[in-house]
Structures are given as structure tokens and as C-alpha cells.
Length: 83
Image (tube, rainbow, N blue to C red; front, side, top):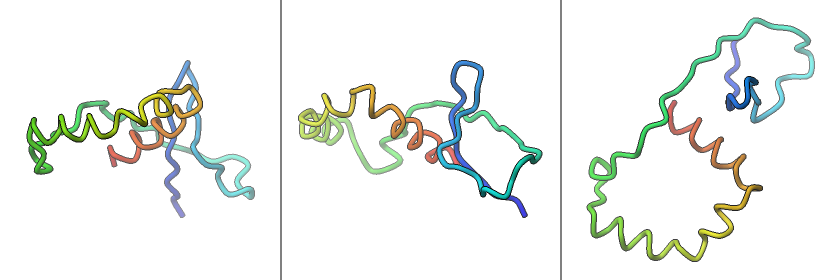
């Protein structure tokens, strides 16, 4: 049975975002590198004015979002959005 686990390639290593089943000691894997592009806001119904309004409303969270501890969540979200 195949199981999909998300991860991030960083500094020559693949870091898994969750642990595989403990019964798995060794298994073949396939690693697929996803493109890291931007989000097409117009396709989601968000124009430039609306994007600016959202950005202004979310600036209060910027300090926490940009802290080093939050990087793991950024990586997870990016990996999931590419599937």
C-alpha cells in the first residue's frame, strides 16, 4: 500500500512533516520536486484592491508569521498547495 507523506527538501536532505508508520523500517520512495510559484489571485476572485485590503488587515500578524519558529508551517502549507 502506498502512503503519501509531505516533506521539504532543505540543505541536501528531505525532512518529513510527519512520521511514517513505525512498522516501516525500510521502503522505496519517490521524491517529486514541486514548483514554488506565486498564487494566481484573479483566478480566486481577488483583484488588486481586495488584495491590498487583505494585506492591510493581516499586517498585525506579520511579526508572528515571520518568526523562525513558524517556518515549519510555511513549508507544510507550500507543499500541500502544490498537490
